[in-house]
Amino acid sequence: MVDRVTISNQALSLLGEDDQLTDPDDDTHAARSIRSVWDVVRQDALRAGEWNFAILRAELGAEVGLTAGELHPYSYGFPLPTDFLRLVEVMYPPDLRDSYSIERGRILGHSLGPIYIRYVADTPETGRWDASFVKAFAHLLAYQIAERITGDRARKSDCWSGYRAAISSALGIDAVENPPVVTYEDDWITARVGGAWPTVPNT
Image (cartoon, rainbow, N blue to C red):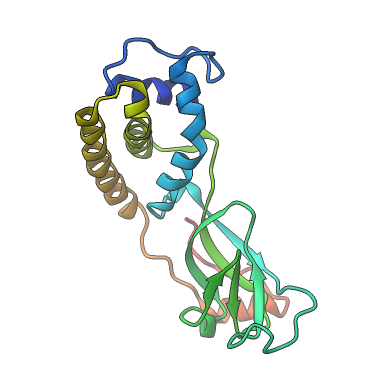
């Protein structure tokens, strides 16, 4: 299980830095530089793909107090989870899968709801990250702090090239781990009227 210090030191090594962190809260230039961008870089890297380790499912209910048609041309708004970073798909209802808009932290649509989604969640726990994502993240982190740490634009460019290669490889590996997700509409309908929970393959 990889931790934040290990990932930080990977990024510093990519910059040719010999001084390594022993704690994320070290009072050093390198540690402060990493802390200043860590959360933004994490969310940026997570948004770059549909990572299996970061995908969650959620049931969303419509906002209370809205009048049909108030969100013209949509009728209902469904607040997104607080850890939402990227929508993977609207799983149910079927007529909403290709007819919605994401605006101001909510999904807008014509369905009364509830609606069911799969999404990429902010995942700050580094122990959940897979190795290929860690490699890509370390390159992106190094890219973000390169000038501040080294002042070397060439080194920064190398980190960006490394990130692009690593993220492409990571996404390729991630994409083939699971078969396509199939939504069984009859099961969703059964679940909504009190039947068994739908049989949808796990992610």
